[in-house]
Length: 167
Image 1 (cartoon, helix red, strand yellow):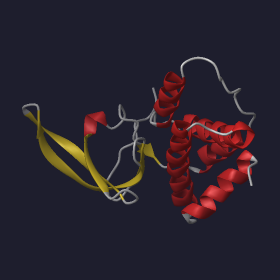
Image 2: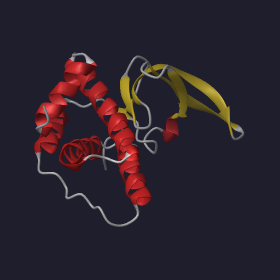
Image 3: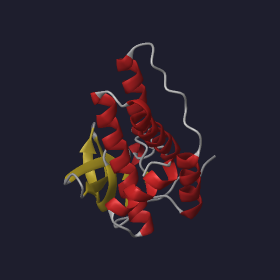
């Protein structure tokens, strides 16, 4: 069984549907007839603050930022061969699948989506929806890489692009 990280006030975490955030407080909140501890997470990029019940943290995919080993894994994924672009079928389902992977909380899925969308954009262009997904996914990934490596977001985007092979 995987070790469940225990978060505390001041920890920087990755929130899948919002990006990098900071735990500002742990509050007791009345939910469904019971008082439960909730993490108050502030995402500076969007100026969004969310409360997540402690027992929903892992189900929502909230995780600590990448460590050096996971960052190296991510860079390997970015540099790896892309998946073949599926052009047939339902484009709406394809975009929903990409969006699910972006919001899964998995840094490996996020890295694969960014890598594939960047390369597809260079090869044959993207639909409007795919472009929006690339912007979202790349933003999440760049802000996490920037936070982990202590660089600005633009430098992180350039680093990601260099691993993907897009300059």
